[in-house]
Image (spheres, rainbow, N blue to C red):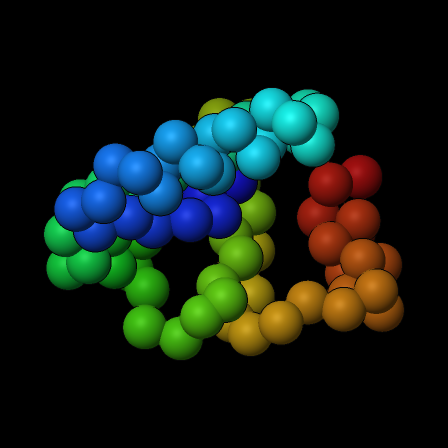
Length: 82
């Protein structure tokens, strides 16, 4: 999960990391600290947020959702996983 992007502020990285530890987040998170163009180029992002990308165990993209996901969307996501 890449839930946060930081552009030049290391204090924000520390705060996000501490929050994750205190909240006992059990899944890996990535905090991006580079240039926006590098991020959008690597993941082929249109600029719309949020964007969610589902990968298989081999790292291949299986599905992409642009915009918010809601509880009703879980059935769609589950179909890609099972």
